[in-house]
Image 1 (cartoon, rainbow, N blue to C red):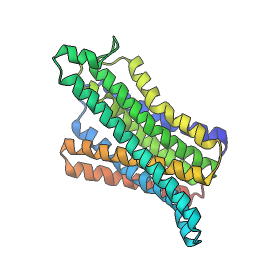
Image 2: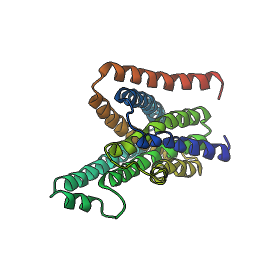
Image 3: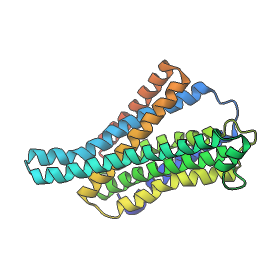
Image 4: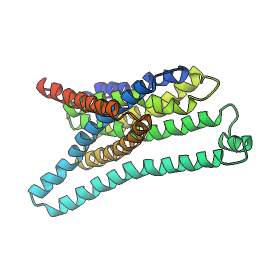
Length: 274
């Protein structure tokens, strides 16, 4: 896969986040429809978590089979560090966001909200959307690293699966960004929604550029482990969202559909010899 093709696919995976953002300017979207989309995204991510993590662990298995204990210690440390950073960095970011939100909402009325929205022109809900988009951007950066490193190692099938899977998932991330705006009396501007898309989606492309720059098994392990950790965090958050909708059957079918789409895409690419 050429560099130009890889960068184009990385850009596409990031741009799909714009598909969900227009819902911030829509009223009356069915909660069941949101629940189904969220559950489907969760199923896709569960497949990608398995796919990415298996790529990170494969060199560990090879080192164990060859009984090269020094190599095993090295690569397992890299994988563990990447996974912990990918997961816990987003957990820490989320805790920081919620602490700011509590500080904003528990103070004396309007003065507290003003403290949360420190710059003029943005409401507290809009600033919360900015922070959510930033967190999603951090997550998408690690996804881009995985895409780029897959292409750098000529793992074309894996790279395409990641692009398709991440692209489908990113399309639903727009819902999370505009979620805090659903109760606002004034609809967000297209300019604001566009900025949220850049903050959340552009890091996918940036990560792809960096990951594609060179091929290294150690870097590949690190990038895949980072992506796996961040994917696990998002899966946890999406499952929490699914629980709020209260429809277990709809959630289960959405997850089944997402998993099916993930494996079906992988099988089609393998059968096509990609």
